[in-house]
Image 1 (cartoon, rainbow, N blue to C red):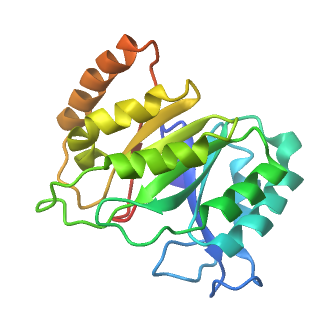
Image 2 (cartoon, rainbow, N blue to C red):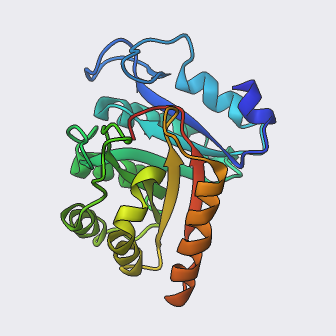
Amino acid sequence: MKEAIKSAAHMVEADVLLRGCKTEKGEPIMAHPPEMNSDNTLQEWLQEILNADKGIKLDFKSLPAVQPSMELLESIKLHLKRPVWINADILPGPNGSNAVVDAKFFLDIVTSFFPDITLSLGWTTGCQLQRCKEGYSWAMVKEMAEICNALTQPITFPVRAALVWQSKSELLWLLQQSERYSLTVWTGKQDQYSTEDLLHIRENFDKSLCNIGIAQLFFHSQETEEG
């Protein structure tokens, strides 16, 4: 946490679930499955991050954690001076498991508290990338577009760097559906991807995006294999 605050990163991410279980009871904590327990609570984390000049990204790993977390966030919203993104994997992606959270319930809860907050809506991925040539399919991006069509706030779609090129047409189409949309490109801890590879994506994607009048590309270093 302290290293993240001192870093050059513009935003700090926190994985959120309920302590010890996925029931409706419990306290939101900072943990990433398969770990289900932690001494770091979301409430303590939020209090500490308020003193930092950083944006916040909350990545939800269970649906029951969303409501109590939104209540905590609402209690400090007058003190939030930097951007806040709310993230969840709401659809299965390339070789991914089922969605982490139910899209409708997740969006209903978040927007009831923060109707204008930036949403980060992604797909699960789980392939061995050295052997996986499948990217984000037309069915995947069209299902995401259908879900997001009724929303009004800014939305960024987190996509795995190693799956971007084989999905270029699909992802560009998705971005063209609204000026509110952007991509956040992330890399897994074990992904074999260099800085030069990421710069190549940025350069070529930016050219395509400029051709349709938008520039919507972010980069994010990810520590986990699932996204």
